[in-house]
Image (cartoon, rainbow, N blue to C red):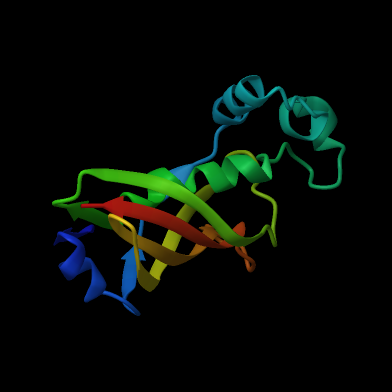
Length: 151
């Protein structure tokens, strides 16, 4: 369930708060192939289903950057900031991929609003995120995302 805030002042009150957990989404071979087409990264470990079965993970795996790209749709399930004119991704402080995401796996995001700092015309937020893999002992990604919201 999404947390909705109206404006920057309400957003600042959430610093240190857990934002919750998104719904699960499945990482299908079609999604992996579409990402490969968009990025030009057609490494066999991602797109060659037969060869990947013989590879180190026993199945095709998602690109790490696909997992990272899925942060945005997962994050939008957690926090909805109303009363701002513009929302932009600003970058990342750190990212790690502790465990590969095998085709057919389901992932979800757990988020925490770590920081809100003033920037010209708005604020920059830092979100600590963990992208979990259903049933896996280690997460797919651990990251710190930066976004800006302008009034």
